[in-house]
Image (cartoon, one colour):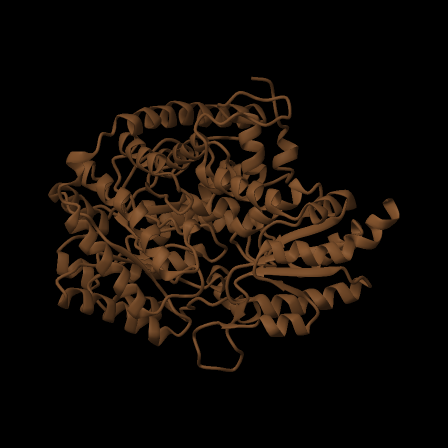
Length: 608
């Protein structure tokens, strides 16, 4: 393979933090930071969640996971206890909670008061971590905005001392950028130190760097959770590249740092065949129990009745997968209202009851299932995933990146990014347009492309022709770390021959405004997910005014925000307020296109 990159292109810094020193710091911290008891560990009489998972796997039991975390800490604490109690009283089970933190938690604690926040929960201090996990005998899983964030060390320390033994989300490190945060070296340093802290709880001596705990202590296996859908997965066209990332993360966590990698998938896995195949492929490359398999909410509609069908469609696959070949992944029934707002406690309970009952009803379903086709896909995932891993490591090594140094390797992967990794190192055949033919198509990307084709083809011909002839320049961005809406929007605009200026995810308003001025943009299209639509638009408006420009602003997604100076923990619709500020608040992409036609129509008439 020819040399693809130069070191200076990826790591131009003359001096980087010393990985050995970072790992030593994590190891030293492990002498004082210890996993402490909580009701889950005590009730189950286990040292860690993975011990519990292995016992359940031997029984062939399906485990259940739920996401909780409201802006009000008291409500989150109540949910922790109430969901468990109501399910137990109904003879149902909940095994683990994913604690939903606000992205503000990713910032160092001393900076949070002056940093942006969303609709999630903020834990003020380590006592809040512990108070939450003491609320019921359910395994606490601290995922998002822990590992991979600038505050990784302090957050992970608090989670361990609260009795959490499943901590993530490593996948976020590679793709997420907190708004207004630009120090990648500090973020990577914190992540490596936090990984070493977790690995030191497990007593592993490994290649290159020694990670060990104190003699005579009881080993504790900490699951380093990585949600692939929050990492590179949604950005790859080839699912075998996603599996290659599994292998690369295992190499970093297990080979270089001596920890235990536990992978999560599912949010972008729409095809039942590849969903099952991915689970079976994971079983063949990992002895570590998985964390959970996420619900496929990309297929959720606004109607609750239809969403129960969507809920059942992915749950049944996940239930059967665990019954046939247990991998320790807890299934995750996402409430059917999740597509439109944050679910309430009652809705979480209903989804869990539905999943528990479906698992019971599916007792004999495995007898009907032939896994031959899924196993054939799993073969491709493993073989081509290994090829991708080898290509990446070889290519980075040739660029003089020290692939045995976890700091350099992680930062290099983050900076190269998904699209270049797939183009340069993917196992699929390289086409003339410098895109690789997928070995196994990543179904969500394919579904988004198909939706874009359908939408554009259904447009009124006059509208379609005028938009395509306009040559409009559109700046695109998302307000936060969620990207699917932005990907879909860009797919539609590309089919209409628009020139797109991509500002990425979690794009700061000043950057968006500067790019709009630099490229003389006709419009700005913003995708937002939850809780900051109004505050983001206000800031963007101010930045555009500073730049002296006034392009049309389109904003779509979840157009809500938690009212300021209120005890309300749920976001409220702010569509009217957005429109009052002069933005086109769009429920559908089609709404945006109709408004965009008015912007470009004068230009089209001149061209004609």
